[in-house]
Amino acid sequence: MSRFWSPVVHDLTPYVPGEQPKLANLVKLNTNENPYPPSPRVQASIHAELGQDADRLKLYPDPTGSQLKDAVGRHFGVPAEWVFVGNSSDEVLAHAFQALLKHDKPLLFPDITYSFYPVYCGLYGIDFETIALSEEFAIRVDDYLARGAANIGGVIFPNPNAPTGRLLSLDEIARLAAALPDAPIVVDEAYIDFGGLDVIPTAVTLVRQHPNILVTQTLSKSRSLAGLRVGFAIGQPELIEALTRVKDSFNSYPLDRLALVGASAAMDDEAWFQQTRRQVIASRNALSAGLAALGFEVLPSAANFVFARHPDRDAVALAAALRARSIIVRHFKAARIDQFLRITVGTEAQCELLLEALKEIVA
Ligand SMILES: *Cc1c(COP(=O)(O)O)cnc(C)c1O
Image 1 (spheres, rainbow, N blue to C red):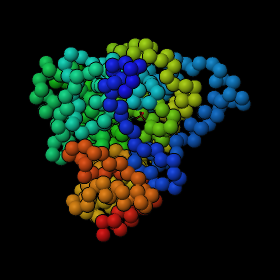
Image 2: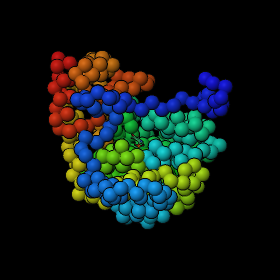
Image 3: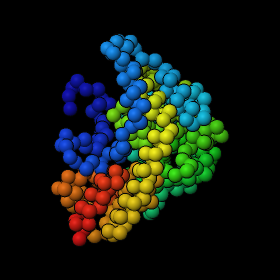
Image 4: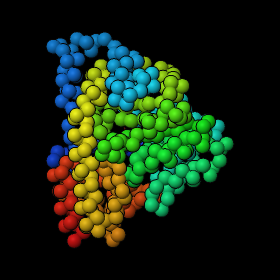
């Protein structure tokens, strides 16, 4: 506390990100990074942008990020005018909270979800209500609609949800959006690229039909670029304009030159994307089966992590025992989920190490 702080800062409860340990040789399965490297085209494009002497860095980047908007538009088959790009999807989400989700009526989101949402509500003074997931940790659209359309300012949820990994069907998302035509619906698809093998069940396919749906995605997970900080949103131009107005009232150049070229190259490398996301999906399915064989209850995951609990081993003790073996996973001290561990899907070798360690620990 300080007398120099503004009142809003006094009242903030900031988000706490997963640990980024300085120690080498850890099996790091705690923050849902991709275990595989980004497309080699990313490095090549960044080298090309730097050139011989990094002379180009003296110039500001393109404030509109048009190269990246084009690449994202190509990937999804939508016009570039339907794309917003930002310095991480957390930043895009923050703009969405301020630009679209702040209304007199409360914003709704699940009781168990991405813990940044209540933080943004605190930062921007947004009234919110949480809606409990079912016993099976699923989002039930009817529980949202039961609040009455007249009492809902907006809805946001991750799909698949975090940290549960459970997927809500596109039919259910469309039903929610159709029933609340005056409320913006933000679908945070940080993990959607791990949600299907042949067809990725993205709500981008719903935005033509539903002018109130905004979809956000990140290059941090499925494109292996958590260190580059790039995210985007897709929606009809009316929604995109709201985000652009906030962005241009905050930072005109949120994406630097290296991020713009690197992210565009990653979006264009479809073969790399397909290969790495399929590898992660295969490892996730094997990891889920391996955990189940050790007696864990594992929620059905559509993400690059699994959420699991053991019926007679305490989650905090399990996490500590893993840590003693240099494996780190994430535990959340929250109601209903404090006996679960969230385990990021690593390489095949990392998943094997984890399963071997747990086999010893639960024996
Ligand atoms: C990782 C994550 C994000 C943030 O991604 P960045 O682009 O790295 O900021 C957003 N939403 C959810 C649910 C996430 O898990």
